[in-house]
Length: 401
Image 1 (cartoon, helix red, strand yellow):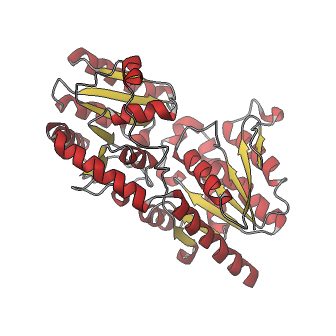
Image 2 (tube, rainbow, N blue to C red):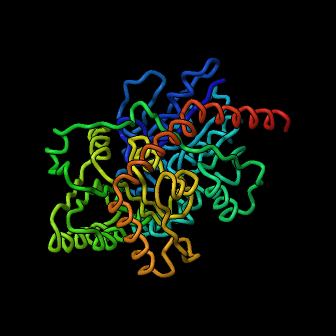
Image 3 (cartoon, rainbow, N blue to C red):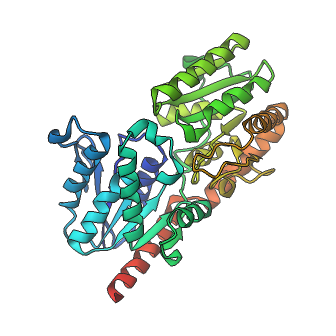
C-alpha cells in the first residue's frame, strides 16, 4: 500500500502541532510492514528518503499567501500518480489532496487538526485569502473519502461546521506522543541560559502567539499568582502585529509588578523545551480553541501537571483531579471561542494556577499520573495502527463504489 502524505509542515520546518503529528505519524507508518509512505511537503529541499519538498512558485511570489499555497498544492498533486491513497493535513494541503483524488482516481483522507470556521480571526492574517482557505477546506472535507478527527470534540465540530458530511466517514484517531523523546530532562545549564531559577516555582506556557492559544487570558490571570512564582513564556510566531502588540503590552505590565517573567520568543530545540518543562511546577494551556493539544501531552510526558481550558479535545487528554486542573469556560457560539464572561474565565484560570503552585506535592503527583497516561494511551504505534485501519476501510469502501 502506497500512501502519499501531504503536509505544509515537515521537519525541520515545523511550527505547530499539525507538523508534529505528520512527522510522527509518518515515522510510525514507515515502521510497519507492507506500507510505503511518500511525503510531499512545502518548503526547502529535504534530504530524507521518500520525502519531496515543493517551494512556492516564483510566478506567485507577490500574490496573496493563499494563492501561493494553491500553487504549491497543484505541484504536489501532479506528483501523486501511483499512490493508493492520499492523506492531507490542514487546509494548506487539502487542495492538493482533493485535486490529486480527482486527477488520479484514488481516495483522499483528510486529517482535521483545526477548522477554518472556528478560526475567524485568521481573516486578520489572510485578508480575502481566508475566504479562499475556507472554501478549500469545505470542498475537500465534503468530497473526502474519509476524515480523521484528532478528538471526539473535533469530530463534533466537524459535523456541526459541515453538516453535509456523512458521519460514518468521520473517524476519531487521537494525536500521540513519543514518550522517549518527551521525558523528564533535568538540565541546569539550560535553566541558567534562560534565567530560570530552579529553586522557585514556575508556570510555563508553550505555544504560538495566536488568538486560539489564549495567551492574553493567561497573562491577565498570572496577576493572581504569588510573587515568588516565575512565568516561563515559550511564545513566538505571532499571527498578526495586533496580537503581538497586545501580548508585549501585557508582558510589560507584568514585569512592572513582579520579577521572574521570562519570555523566549524563538523556537527552541526539543531538549531545551523538555528541560524547561521539567523545571516547572505546572504547564498552562489557556486555549479557547484546541482540537486536542499535543502540547498537553508533551508536558504530561515530562511529568508536569497541566492547567487547561475545558474546551475542544483538552478534556480527552487532561483528567481533572488526576493529571491536572480543567478550567470551565462558557463560549460565544460565533466561531471565535471567546468566553461569554472573559473576567470570570480569567479569575477561574488564576484560581486553578494558584491551587497548582500552592500544593507542589499534589502537582508532582498529577505530573507522574500524566506521564503514565501519556505512555499508556497516546503512543504513536497505536495511533499508526488505528490510522491504517481507517485507510483499509476507506480503500474497501472506495473499491466497492
